[in-house]
Length: 328
Image (cartoon, rainbow, N blue to C red; front, side, top):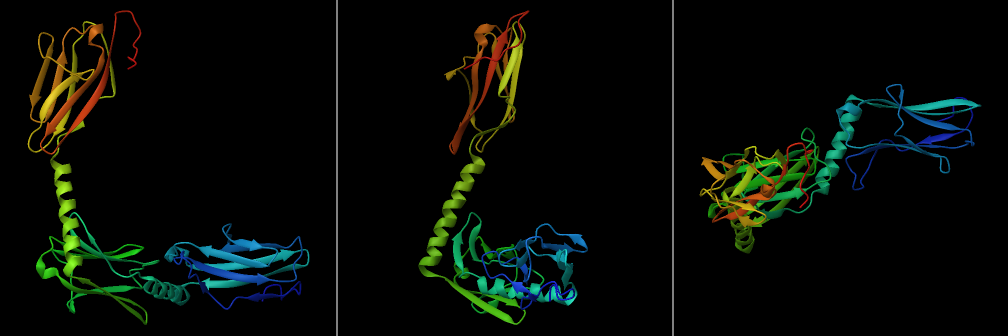
């Protein structure tokens, strides 16, 4: 008990390691309650003999609390709570190593398993995804197994299973009618075994497939639409009578139509203006530039999937003048 050695006061330990069951269930809490204190009494937390400033102490209630967010193996060690004043000092120690740490991880795993939400079905660009949200997942202390029509599933070319800190998922790529049926997720954490199920058939399958097809079509459009991918600066300045070359890279399938604009009007490629296209590289050249060539230029590309414009502002300054950016 805290303060017992020097008879400065009495303290009581909590009932042991407290695992938070709040939404922040990935944390571990250690709590001590101190009595018979006074205004000058100081409460400190230590980890591996170093002061741990993250600890809390409420002098009104005498409660000392240490909360470790995202508990990991790096947090293993010896924790000490110490109280002191002019009457003396006392402490209590928690050895959070080996079996003690394993016990906490096992309990966190049990809480994580119990926190798993019902399975949800989601159409994706690649296929259909089944998933459950959890407040905590630790691959060492928790095990997941997926079943389809009571047959255990293994990750392969078309079926992939995985986890994150807060999600357990199964991804069915390029789904087919044979993928219809009942799916079961089994979560094991210590002695705790939890099963969740979802029926991927009927309207649930049709809805997921419709969303998959929609997202797949959008992905094809985004991948193939005409784009200006790189090359044009935001602003370019040049002295009159020089030659200006602007080059950019475009993409698209089918290959996009290409137009250059000046102040939103099509550029006529005659006399001093020239355009050269080499594969995906597009270059506009303006010979012997003058002040009338200043303005906002754009390269406009389009194909059947969409269009895009890349823009640059050109400022032409005279001999002897300082460089200045044209304000549009």
